[in-house]
Length: 295
Image (cartoon, rainbow, N blue to C red; front, top):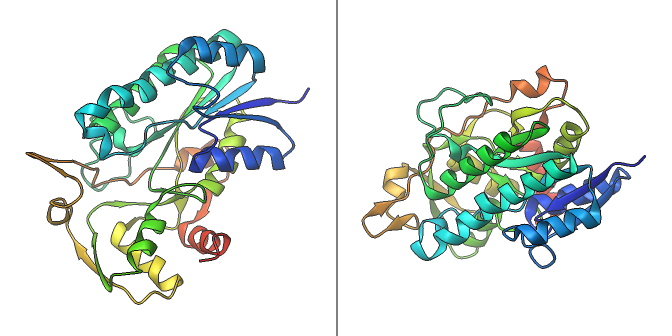
């Protein structure tokens, strides 16, 4: 019997690649977005699940605009999507006895120091509202289900949506110099590569918490920007600055400096331990992405 997948947020960066990868592998894949299933509406979620009766749900839908999540007028929407919506999906998964893959983030941790964070770390301390709601989403999943995979990712880029690479290239059109933070350290995640891994994980019964970003060593945003411009042959000087120095710009709110993790080093050793192939090096992923986008 063929495994049936339901993908939420199918029009986003990750959901788009997950559905493409599932279809390529021959799985039945039903993609949903807010237009045909409002995850904040429990009744709508239950009706969709009753109609589809999925075996596995890969929950990609989320509010991911970190800065905008801090605005008071948005907080109820952020909570509705990231917490209530996730709880609705988890409840429906429990009712239908299906597996759930929940996509989370390094933002659930305070991310201080320079040691890689292990996936089973319980020292949660979100620095901002986005991180808080994603942490509460994790709780909703882990407290509701036994058959769950919580996969934390960072620095995401993909074909179908906004990302750091597109932002840098856009800025390069009218800037010869750019300030880029050099003290936030992590690794990028290419949604094309991640999609493959999420499907591999979902086919198993090795439930629990995972970290998944591309390999290739930890870098700063500054390092990433330099590599982007080198590969695309853009003549842009990248000037390293600290988060504190840069933070007076877009992340600033009246009386508030939006806090972001300095340490986004995610320990991914659990993937190998459980028999899953790690993602390719980020340098390779970036080259393939640039080629795919014809940049």
